[in-house]
Length: 139
Image (tube, rainbow, N blue to C red):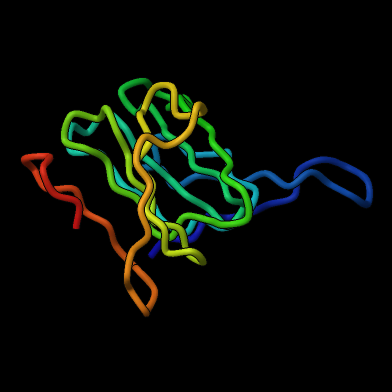
C-alpha cells in the first residue's frame, strides 16, 4: 500500500501542510470530517456512496472529473455502517450502526426523508449491504 507523502510548505514556524498524491491518483474525495466507515461504487459505475463517522451520507457523481457531491445528508444520532445502491442508481439503502435500522432513500430528493424504513433483527453488527442485480432484493 502506498501512503501519501505529507510535506510542509511555506515559511515561518507554522507552515501549511499539503498532501501530495500518488502519481496514479486521479482525484480525492473531500467532504467527510471524520473517518469513512463505508464506501460503495454503484452498479452503473457513475456514482460512489460514502458514509462516515461524522454521520454524513454523501453521493458522488464520478462521471465528472473531479467528482461532485450530488447529495450530502446528515441523519441524527447515528452513522451508516453499510450502504448499497440500486441497480438503476435511483435509490440507495443505508444500515445504521447503533439502531441497526435500514433506510432506503431516493438518490434525488433524499433530504425529504426515507421512502422506506425498517428495523433489522440482527443481534450482531451489520457489516455489509448488497442490492441484487434484479433490484428485487436487499441482502
